[in-house]
Length: 391
Ligand SMILES: [Zn+2]
Image (cartoon, rainbow, N blue to C red; front, side, top):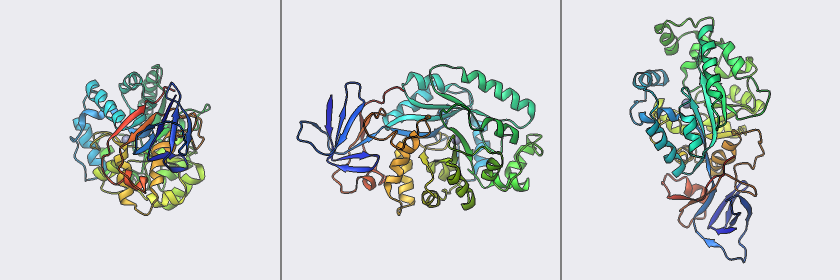
């Protein structure tokens, strides 16, 4: 048993000054309490549970700094496609180490190749592999689904099938793949409203995506969904719900946010990636005001400089200073953990008895406001006092 005392302990209910965390011999948390008279390891700073990076594409890890942004998603995606190579195992292993060193206990990783799945299993990460399907014409949808089914057989790591986006998937494919699953499992993540052009395609059959699909010679006009917005399409297909997490939502409007709140559909924020690709952030205050379940992801190294998800939370804290920093810490911990499996108790992923996401020490200086100090933009040194346990 270890008893560790810090200046601050971040619990699911907020920061606890001078708190203590007791670990059993496996590193599982057995107690979180106010300062006691017992002997303890004094570490100062802040204790956090291991963090959840809720959106990444490890297989793009060799593209760090190589895909210019700033002109919107369709030009970024075309630049990505022209640079994309077979997944580089060394780059992916390096990215996993980088994420773990930054305090990541669990990673929700989107893959088309399946190549990161055994590497995440080898690295003892928690999380899920999101085996992503794209398909517009029926024959392509069918071959994409059978390819995904083969990857889902890979043992050793939780994996689910999902779709890429409304602009790359036929409406009937979305309805089938994103429907609430019969058995509870990891949430399915889905790129949504990353660019305003998504709505132009669905609503008006125009814009950069229409030009792109026409250039590729795709037979999309009767296959891509028809709706006023991506969320309206998902709603009409009856696939919104707690099993789904929409990634980005940069251009999601008030009526659509209402539908996400009403259906307990989660949102994954990737602010650094959004700023790199399109130069805009989502209506985060609108999401917070509606009590949406939030998580945070870095996105891939093709649109984000590193896999330190705390740096994304710091961008949100700077952009929305009126929002309590506890919102971002909840998104990094309990919010992200809510996407990992069927147990959606609000305390899962937080520091409380039974917690298994590891114990992370952040070397904060003396502060009366640990949330704001943590997210002030400084890359605070951090180390694992106990590693995350395997599920
Ligand atoms: Zn993504």
